[in-house]
Amino acid sequence: MRGVYHPEGHIFSYLSPEEQFAKIHPLRKIKQNADAVLEELPPVFNAVYSDTGRRRFHWNGLLKSLPPSVLHSVRSDRLFCEMLDYNILCRCFPRVNLEDGSFDAPRFSKNREWLLAHAASQKAPE
Image (cartoon, rainbow, N blue to C red; front, side, top):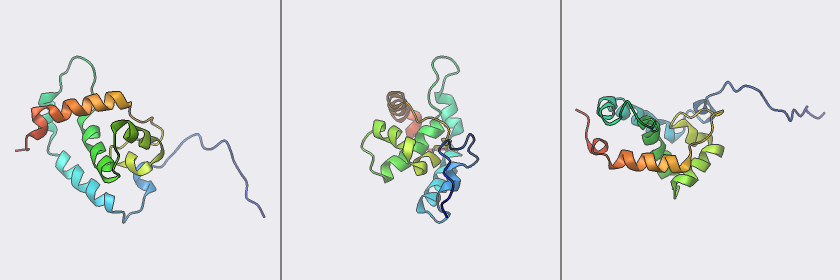
């Protein structure tokens, strides 16, 4: 007997990207370590960001986007932003929901360069 095919899909998604990959996946440990390190950095980055002017990417999402791009040997920011559209594992690190669009590549690149060039990105937490 054949199953029923529903081409319209679902209206709502109740799963997070983290629920989509294996509990024993090695990237889970890397993500836990990255989360632990980034929990110590808000005071450093609060001093960097201004309350006025154009909005920048949140530093947490930017820095969490770097490990999957390095581990998957992604050559460019544009390719990484494209990968976010079809690779759920990449969405898990910066906590991008499945319904959300991917990052805008030029804006992502500019903000990443600004963040990494800033003196606070090389400062160790106290």
